[in-house]
Length: 536
Image 1 (cartoon, rainbow, N blue to C red):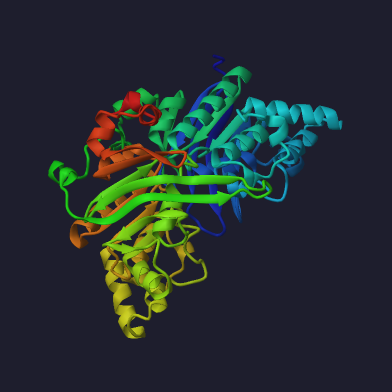
Image 2 (cartoon, helix red, strand yellow):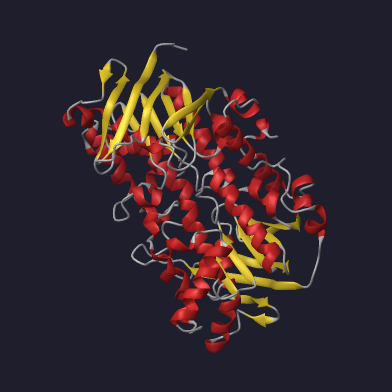
């Protein structure tokens, strides 16, 4: 490998507005040509600020106040905007985190890739069409010529992420920055995306700067790991050094908090095996959707699904995107109508209930969604967000609701003083605690947790999981935990339901599923968990 630094950052300092305290403190970082380097750290550690500084795209009034960023022989700090526009895309490609917000929903995906090719100087309709098809194929999208004429909503999350990779590589950059490119994807799709990304990087000799909160992914896919805390680099080393022998206290905390398939379960053995009467019974559940534009065509998204949740226990539902997990959850929440089959809460049918009966059942089953940023109204105070279910169900007067909000903030370990603040004043972990407090407002018996910790860094995730286990122990809550993170499942679940293409392929205790999986698909899911080579 060429040992000359391809990207060299020296003494980088970044400030925002009039704040005298910088958010990056003298950061030094090197990336050699063809090298793969991961930057890890909790939210707010400065990872995304480094990306913004490299690209000259710091948000708001952010600015570089000291230091140097060299891309080869080109100084990026202080470069003219025209120079930076010529570098973005052409020399530095970016694969952003969220394909839903980074693709234009009104444009066909082929046209969005074609825009990047136009910027690269490629002209001619036939040549552009050929290159679009080649890039989509290279990114692992089958039937690329046909699918280039489709819109983003017609692609799965994994396929949309591949489109972003195709756009990032369209101009053949020498440096690729991947910002949490797989954080919202299930493990099998994550493995496919990372395999493709690795193959493309290696075949082109491209340098890769990989931003992630997943230590397992960083360990599997990069040559070096850089650990950041509060705008400073606190440790640098190979995956073996960082995960096997961390030196800094913060790195040790990160490694200890990161769940793995060999982590000690949070539930004691007697709790994992304990059985009680079921609070939820799902029996032969079917959900079919008509496919628009195809007369008479039906998609069976949920196919005769059956399982139970014992009172006070946690059942995890896992499976790849499109397996039917969320559709099942929406039926249990009363947000979708089942085509056939039943879902019973304490013997009362969610699927058959209507009107007042359905309304009453919804008090007993409450959701906590994936995105703490998108699931809370940014214009409302924390108090108003938490007491909204009480207002909807006309529980108590204003004074009583205020007392209840204070109790709920105590329950989720948040200071009462935040009640009058807005969501944008809180961290991601604090917002998710607000979402949990809101879900608890009506004293439900069953929580539906849909990817409730997947968007959080490992330390905050660890705190939220600890909170959920504590609430379950104190309040006797039952959880339906939908997730793509099998390492988390291993820690907190009593039972696991594995779904594929709308069907249950395995349903057993967590120990049986992890230690003696019967289905080939389950074994494939377990084999795709990142960081297995470094598992504790």
